[in-house]
Image (tube, protein in one colour):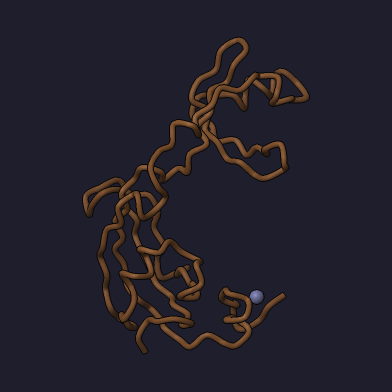
Length: 168
Ligand SMILES: [Zn+2]
């Protein structure tokens, strides 16, 4: 069966920056393959267009430029915040959390989750980078298609894969 709209795809992959020799970002092997429902915006577009038409047992290797993946690094997503806004209950915790390179899960004024990395800290200010960790990175994927099957009606309805056909 070929990969196409409303098919469930299971695959392994290695994601590297730029090319085959680039830094390893993520690896998914056959012990816990990645499953997704094709054609429902569950993965970045370039990932789907490169897999379309492939079938079980096929290998793949392709690159997706950053502009078609997680976009460029945006200057406006790098901001200086008052230390006060972090509102840590105790000072010891604050020093521990506000380390350069730490990832923090924050919320904006509307309560939406916002993940950022600490770039620098001084007496009053914290500089944070809220860009996606893969912003500005050209992606290179290699892997193998393990399974292609027809999605069930409820999977198509819900727009995602149901493990073992069940849904809780
Ligand atoms: Zn569901």
